[in-house]
Length: 165
Image (cartoon, rainbow, N blue to C red; front, side, top):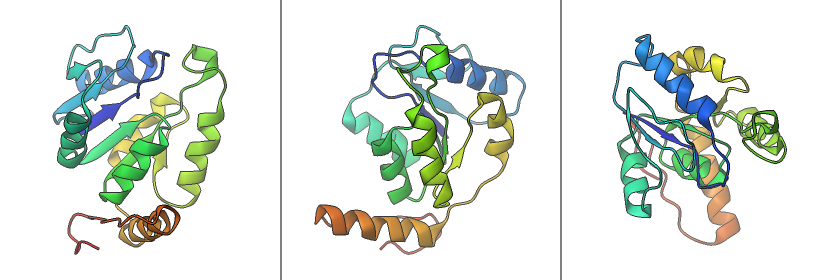
């Protein structure tokens, strides 16, 4: 299952939702997709969605998903990495009215430079990114340890096919 989440910002992210619809229609994506679409006014035709989900629902979708496609929401990205999920991040861009500036590009590039996620600056790259990518268990465990150091809270990292740490 693929979980698409666009966060709870006051900005639409129609560009991403339309691209997912196209990829399903063109049979590039052949698995179940669920999306949390926020305030976007585009309503997907080929997959299930909800504007907003509860924290419990969000965690359920995150747990069940094989792949997370998301905006540059650090909470989503960090939680997905901790669970050993493959993440593809697509920035909201100001030129499309998706945010006030383009800070999400820098944020996603930082995660990508640490080999934690794949990024697509242009949503048209999504077709290729969906086919590639692996879970980086050692990096997932490393980021979990860093989060634990900073927060002082115990962090459990689960990477499919690996022992939980």
